[in-house]
Image (cartoon, rainbow, N blue to C red; front, side, top):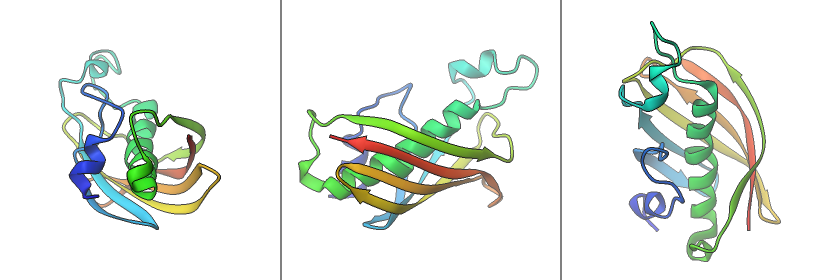
Length: 142
């Protein structure tokens, strides 16, 4: 399965699809990118004078690239429209803000994948290679 096929299998669509490109993926991890369009609806109210990407959206970007894309890759042809994905836990440290029009890179390293549960160490970096946020995310794929 190639990177575009993995993105096509994601159970999300615009405006809630937060994966532009998968740079690399293998059984141990994934790296992907997303650029925050400055016209995304949540920027209108978070914050009025100087919009910042909400932490929950940064977590979602990390989960979509670092957990769901990797899970689809690991399941390969076993992943279908009937497959369910649920986030089970997050522990994220937010270190720098992400502003409209910024491109971020997510790097995920698999901690374990067993009994349908995938846990990863995930880091998000900005275009200056600075760590924006990092932590662990886990989910279950059934």
